[in-house]
Image 1 (tube, rainbow, N blue to C red):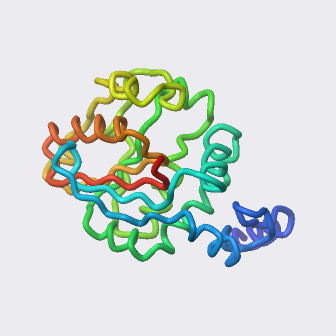
Image 2 (tube, one colour):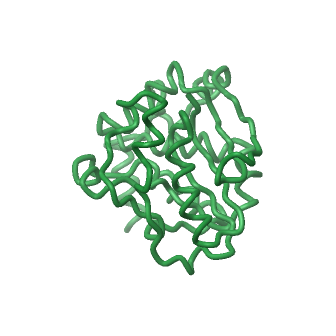
Length: 216
């Protein structure tokens, strides 16, 4: 019965490529997959200056990538998570990077922003990544306790102070001695993910990585 319902829904609302909008069952057509290549960074960077150990950013935050992330976050186009998931799971470097971790933690948003937006854009993607890999999704461990000003509205020097002490850890036993991957959509100064990593490290994680769709 479920298969029949899904078949009917696909006929009425066919899956489209999130980039060009043409009908495409994989949510990312071959033409657009090639089109995105020019924005790729795919660079794993080790660090000792931050609370996390390493990071991987897939694209430069510009052009069509920037446009689609903004539509996804601020224009109620939650369905674009399908396209971003396809991009991530088709990337060999990303898949190898994921193997180094036990848990994936989407950067949380404050409950007030969640009510306004209706979804956490990082959680939608992280949930499907976890379903298709060995990673365990945790959405109740890292919590945003402060409803801070959106980072997009601030200058780079203001961002670190804006997110200071914005996150707390609950149920820390779930992440103690684990290898934890923080997932976010955009990396600009790194203030948000580094603040997340700070509280995770204090909670006793073994290793912390950062994965983002794009880097500004």
